[in-house]
Length: 549
Image (cartoon, rainbow, N blue to C red; front, side, top):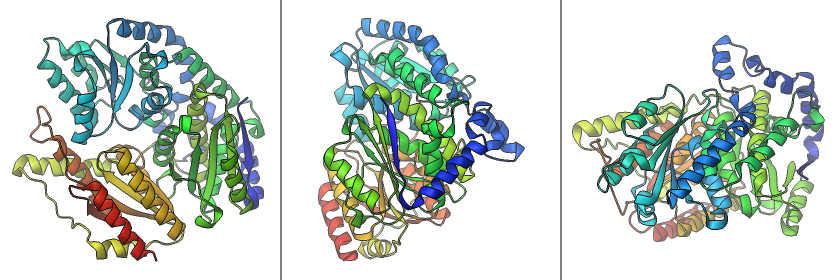
């Protein structure tokens, strides 16, 4: 039985009052009626909001086409495909990433699901070596059909296949919205199929739509079972459900009101079997709430510590399959005793991810109501995109990137660390390949920073996080202390049809992100890790130790 327990501590009266106010305001009823005034009073926002609520009923719609998706997946399996590679960004790729890492290859009978959501040429080189390209189905996933990364991904893989066969389009399908230019491109290039997603579903709310369920079917997940769990969650959030029994309404209202009370660092403690769910929740929460100087900062993958290493800006949510492990439960109990709000959510098995996707979408919309923001737009994401486009235009003309941003020396890093204040969060923005040994080094750094400053820490890999936490970084509260990392790429490839390579594209994205942060008055430094990542990170650890004595 799925259940949720709340330990609200000193904020209990305030949070319970917020839940009663959600009942009085008819939050659930108005959401199901698609009443846009629930979030914003102005008519200009209402059309956009009303066109963003299709996720409320998508489990029913996808159950209706489950048989068709299963039949398509069987056809792909019968054709001998060994890998399915989703090429997308943000909402188009994070659900497949969760499914791939959680389910693996069910029974080994279906193709292995891989995800490409990085312009880092070393990532592309690793994937190229991993797959049998002739037996790989490429899923080009883009809601708008104009997003830079999926576009360059399909150009690259299509070009690679064109060198080997006369009909490369047979190895491609697309998932996009109606009226997207990707529809015409897919037809022209001979893609074997294009799935048209519901247009009234935003990218980060699209896990249970074609963007999530086509990859799920292709990798052999029982999508009927998965969607039935989502349907159960949908019913638990119905308009007639009392607020006290609507766990998603309670969760979202609590998170929103905790942020209003200064506890805006949502720290996720997730069962190792489903820990990648944190990446998806991170995008959903950060991009939905981080605007107008407000926001909830999701903290994912930060190891759980004793009460002494935390400030008074945290709320903890634990998600476990079955009973929470004894040691984790003991630490959470100690945190509750120290006054931190704690939410414990228990699920039955990995198929309950279907329910979690819906519960968190509904909760995020409720948190947006409590914060007084529109949880369905992303007004600041475009800033980094525009800066990147400008840099690439300059490169096309001059053959070089206009890099006018100084790299940080030890003194600048020291000053940045000394500027950290209570209530801040420290974000490591990594424009490097995500490797296990590098990830371990960053975990050491984040623990060191947290334990010395009591501040929350986050880690993002670019350009993925630009479509995730990037909105929060620029539009949320000015409490982020940003360290942007870059390093020399080992590989590089030209982008077909463009005057630049993937390394240049990634560098332009990093510089564009840096410029956007600076323009917003954010505290940010750039650090070049050079050729030897591990040695440079060890040296950085010494700098941090000296600065935070």
